[in-house]
Image (cartoon, each protein chain N blue to C red):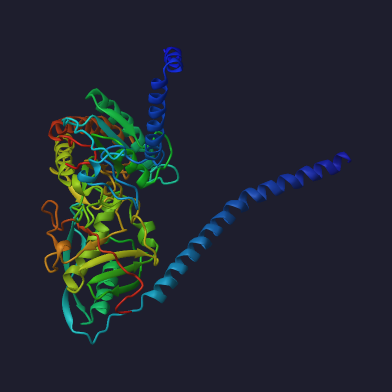
Length: 233
Length: 281
């Protein structure tokens, strides 16, 4: 190779390195943005498919109690009264209040459930056991910790307790599956006791725990048969 | 000594007979002991894994050979603390914005808690030493295999006021003994609920003195790890991974260790071990 060609070759190589140094970060950024967009659109599509607007304006407007974080940063939830048109059908009513709960409060700091989480299905068995099936985001985006996970479950259970009196127990599924914990701590293999004072039998014992805005829920030993839902959405 | 025995047996026909009977007795009793240790099942206040239920005191009183065991004198207090640094391995637990991982910090906390407990005269068993992630049941099994132990799980929260610490005990579980008189594995904590509450309140009171803003009494929550643990069991959760500087958490470690050790020491005399292994408090 002549000396002149060598210089040409080195020059071209240098140019290629400079172009790559400029272009590669831009390419990486574009790929990340595309991945994020795709992820968002998938979640959006899932929400659109699984979360039809069940609010019917012709339903009678009632004052619903929705439980979000109290703001005291102590893991308690407190009720916020919202006027909503709610169905008299317990399954529809439960879906309406849970979707409103998922939409979140005006102050987003008081949110107890991740914004990406969606209610996929809701069943109510004749014995009062409610089965709420949430999207994966409930497990992956709920902050990991006993306090934060307990608050998430409390807000769901207390909201059902206040607005759907037929619910006695709550079983939470993630994407149709029973999972061991919500986000690494709180036990989801058991059903949670809801409306403890309204029920009868040994599982309706008083909820334990110290006095708080919303006492912790008691898991029950009820075996939930998922194969025979009484009411389908 | 052994040679003497062999020589004696060789010269004594009755001795041979006695040795043969002894060997037979050993052969009949050995498989039961082996099965117990190989399955990792608890030797004493046992809770059987998954499908194998726990014997009640009446059943436990009948030993492996079928003979009634003699009651051992009741021993007061606990001597072992099973320390559980939560998460580990691929499970990082709570993650802070500054690259703080719950699984790493609890392991470092555990080292300090261990030292403080040993200074109080406890023997400490850790559910993990390094970056491993035993299952919930494996961790519980380590505690359930001990006699006279308490269980302390360590967590770092994602939420809560930074610089505070909370102790959790399991919600009251429904009846611990079913119609057959056996306790299922997933109800192992039930007989220990009031003891766990007592231990939790003692540790929480000490934490509240040290870390202002912490609750005065232990909280209840349906913590998966505690449910299958057949011992007085608490979970200590420190707030939180959201601190800007990791040293804020590091500064809490001695106080947390001291509160746990002193709380456990104060709890020790109140926990009187049942006379017979397998009995519940």
